[in-house]
Amino acid sequence: MARKGEQFAGLTVALVTPFTADGALDEARLRSLVDEHVEAGTNCLAPVGTTGESPTLSHDEHDRVISIVCEHAAGRVKVMAGTGSNSTAEAIRLSQNAKKAGADGVLLVAPYYNKPMQEGFYAHYAAIAEAVDVPQVVYNIPGRSAKNIEPDTICRLAEIPQVVAVKEATGSMDQASQILNGSDLTVLSGDDSLTLPLLSIGGSGVVSVAGNIVPGDVLAMLAAWREGDVAKAQAVHHKLFPLCRDMLSLATNPIPVKAAMTLVGRDTGPLRLPMTPLTVEQTATLRDTLTTYGLL
Image 1 (tube, rainbow, N blue to C red):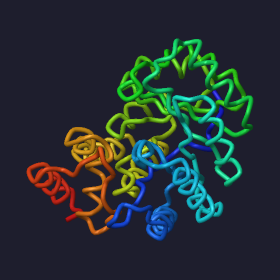
Image 2 (cartoon, one colour):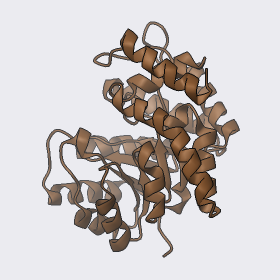
Image 3 (cartoon, helix red, strand yellow):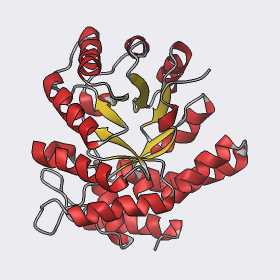
Image 4 (cartoon, rainbow, N blue to C red):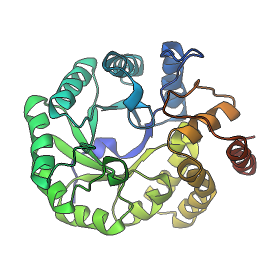
């Protein structure tokens, strides 16, 4: 089946937001991150998602990060801008600004905290599509948003032309299978450790945290699968797995990935409260994983 949203197949990196030592947005470092991913061959960047610490950016900073990434990408890499909100009006405003900035698409997290009914989820995305003609990627992550967008609702959303893909972060292969069976959406993994299993049932790529550190290896796994080299794809998956596990289990994202980037010499600055750094013990565990991986 030809799927909508295939322009977002492959590796999308959930980009960290770099800060200066005093906690301000580090615009120069942000531009250098874009260059690094262009050089690595990353297919798409997703600024200002969870990994980009969107909850602690001001509205002006949110717009500014998207604008910088789009401007500096300059068509060299696609941009899937994080513009989700639990306020439909706010998501519309952010999405309109992202389109003006030149984003190729928007990543819209499920409305969090207010826990809409399924009809509310549908109406939320439909209203954004009505207001902004830009490709939408629905981001379903009930572990953070507190409520699942059910597969039937996502398949119904697929009937909206602007809704082209879903970032599937429920951890459920059954849910992903239902979406793949019942719609023409491109399905992207929202969990690095589940990318290969999702590819095996028809997924098309990943919105990756690990890609901040090892984009080349994530790309190699995707390429091996695409070329039918299952054994190589499995080998890269198992190499990546301990790193992916640390990104998920040591502390809340993006705490571990920012620590890892510092350890490998690609510092992106401090976290903003209420995110706090890894403990000494957690840092030692991460250092061991990076050393075993060959990054240290």
